Image 1 (tube, rainbow, N blue to C red):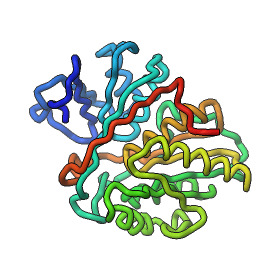
Image 2 (image 1 turned 45 degrees about the horizontal axis):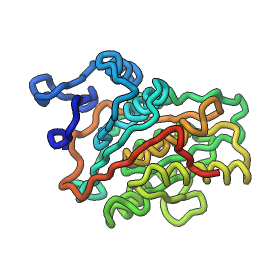
Image 3 (image 1 turned 90 degrees about the horizontal axis):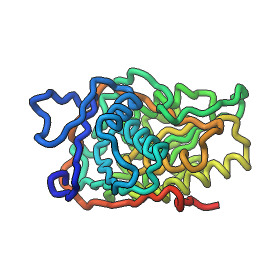
Image 4 (image 1 turned 180 degrees about the vertical axis):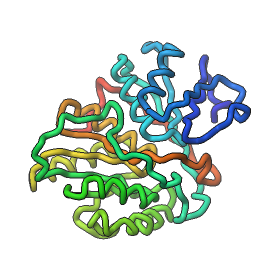
Amino acid sequence: MFRQAVADHKHWLLFPEYQYEEDEYPGETVYALGTDNEAEFILGYLRQFELDSNWRICIDITGFLKPYAMFLVSALFAQGFRRFDVLYSEPSFYAKKEETQFSDERVRIVRQVAGFEGAHDPDTSKDLLIINAGYDHELIKQIAMLKDHARKAQIFGFPSLQADMYQGNVLRAQRAHEQVGVHAGNHPDNYFAPANDPFVTASVLRNIVNEEQARHGISNLYLCPLATEVQALGFTLYYLMECQGKAVSMVYPFCHSYPRSTSEGLSRTWKYTVEFPEFNIGC
């Protein structure tokens, strides 16, 4: 995909959690910084390459670690970028089926994602945590335990990327049932959004928040995207358009390392165009 793309400038971003050695770097322009802080990494990249808001920008988020991708989108928005394209390649199947791990599950810290920290209310009696449940059940557990007092809802990727992936997702998420307190099946606190559509994900998220606000009220809202990179993009767009300056935070379990490859084959590639001035997830 990288070599086939036609562009005046093409950059590899190599995140430290993938643990690449310098002699493994691809031959093209590479940006690698020895920090696992997403803000320091992305701001360093933007300073070095001085992207122009008049350029046509395309970001391939396939394998892009979610906190870095979220902060990059936030930083581009803050710097005046109002339109960019996003690519995402769907796998044919996951290498180890439902036992596939997308991280080493050794959580070093659970915290807010840089740029997505809310101004929170000291009243925590009506806190809500919305988890976009992925395969890594240990990460779901960590997030659920961090906010053990909060009401919890889960969004599952359905339709999934491939027919068998939804069942694998549910089986893995079910292992975190004790901590989440919500069955990973047919339950009123489970919701669904397409695994490959960021805009529908943002819309579903907004509907959940409106429904929960009407039913129970929300003192503080916590969002945690642990499924596909596309759905994490949907969470990001929702936050930037709806949540800035409110009692809303994006929280994430940061791991020591992530496998470089978790899938086999290429099913199809999606292209999404984000236009911030016109982007509207519904009223």
